[in-house]
Length: 297
Length: 329
Image (tube, rainbow over all chains, first blue to last red):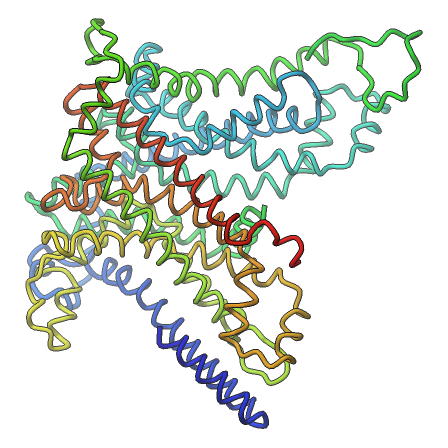
């Protein structure tokens, strides 16, 4: 809160001495930089500490938390990857998230396209029930969902998890893409029809390519959302061989609380975070554009 | 999709939307494009929600087929369940504190980035602020469970970095302090972790919203002699109040959930249930105790509280002047 008081002081000073605006402005900029650096440190420090700790032995972790690791123990990573099963969870996550992402993008685009560009009875009803599905807490559905999957023999299987991911990511995908398809000019559709393209052709060769920016944004959000998903796998995927990363991490941490391999725990955290963080840093511009596009709507 | 074909010799209304002939192409298209996604949606989303309403009125234990209709007994029981009521209170506390603090912090940081720059005449963005934006956004790409686990380690007494830093700067009283193990600090510490996870995302969102404002508005305010603080409070805030409202609703919904964070920080609900939230209690009641009817009733209460919260935010925004924003723009 120091910044706001500083700002107020600066406002007073500036209005009294109009000639010194530039220096005062620099003062504000400095204050702003300091505040932002403090926040950035607060974000980065725990992450740096985690990376450092991932190279420590258990003795070192239990010793002074501010000390540096004696040497770089990559064995922690090997241990986390194999013994703790993080490698397996990683593969499961890639399979589940990959399949679910492709499926939800296709199904979502199809549904959004039909809802946005065709008039028929029940259109609004479907759209609003999607919207409701977006706002209702998943916790309300989780118990019946458990038994829906059980009855379909999909409980504790990767396909079951994939289809559930698709279903719960669908409302968001449809809602977001709806506005994209709605904004596409009608003449292009007409032109495609006149040129003899059927509905299928029109969608896949004309409309879908035009919605590509929207698809990219939604895909990024869906990827992050699904990669971070926790409740659905914890409730519906209790076979430890099928664990995804998020639940595998949780179970590893709850074991490590007592039986201890802290170095490996920190290594597991790094393994979970690093790939997404690297991808983020590479694509950060695109991602922030997406956030903006999504937020303004 | 009603086969309502307009005959050729029909009344010559200037039909904006002509009915297209029903070819195989079109029928197969509609069936696949609408039917497939809808089937998935109805089976895995709509049906569980509807079933939940019914189950909440039964004493179903799940694995036996025996299920008695008990009316509103589950709900009556809930209102005498001290542990659940404690969880409701914790959730409400979270839904009040977390969004406010997150939005104030995110707005402050966004304001610093957008109008904190030096310059006499014009209001300028801060130079080299890209770095802050990228770093602040980090937590958004880290899975919530991992955020929780990292901070659980940071908060751990004696081996965590927080206690070490505090005792380093002379606060020896904190050398062995269990932040998550003390009923006084468990909740604030958990709130802090959630806020840490949320701020960056909303900061980026607000930066975009502020950049979307016509720069001439800022020029005008500057010429009229408004300082930066004044500009931020009486100009920026009203102009992006829709974004703030959306952020408040999202954050509130996230705070009414809070399951992942609490599961990572204090799986058992914390000292004296000080960080227990409704979803945790629901999860235990369902999957550990097998009381499915009772737990779905909790789900209904959670949904009701969520809806009420959203309604409240919209109403407050409307009452405090959101309704005449179009005039102001």
